[in-house]
Image 1 (cartoon, rainbow, N blue to C red):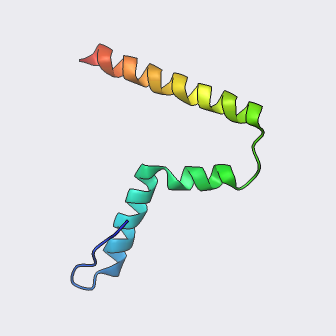
Image 2: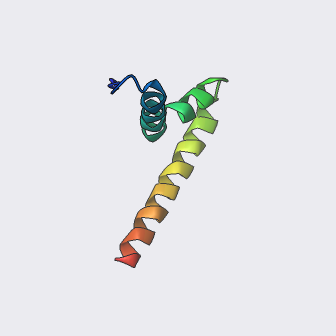
Image 3: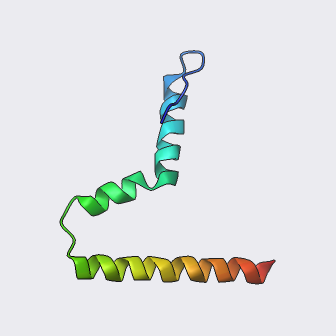
Length: 64
């Protein structure tokens, strides 16, 4: 990942970097990897996330 610093504005570049990392889910992944997650717990979490994505998709389809 590459962020360009324009006019020596490092603070703005850091904000852009943080936003991109947040959108990619890096912070969430780091939090999850901090401790070991049993395979059964991981499977349940992934199923729950998939259901949440599906509900969100259905909700967006209804509003169109």
